[in-house]
Image (cartoon, rainbow, N blue to C red; front, top):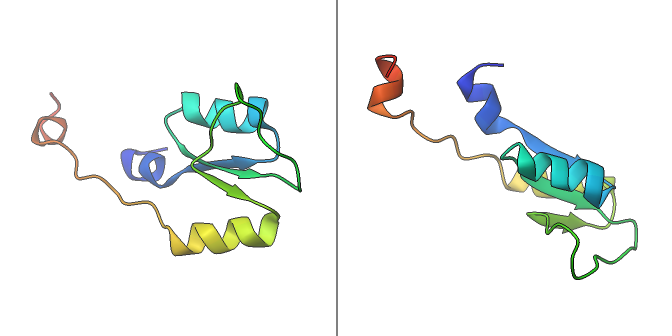
Length: 78
């Protein structure tokens, strides 16, 4: 995966521990598909909570990743 692909990745899933926490540890935006469940106080806080897959897809399409410009140092290998 090159630098541009990493910036475009989003972690999504229905498990706060495996999917959302894992995505956050990887530095990704996250979408939790709650299926009617509620998040507990100490659970990971996703970037967005969707009730189902359709809502998650709608949010992802409306909120595309905003690629960051590479730093000048990364362009010269520093």
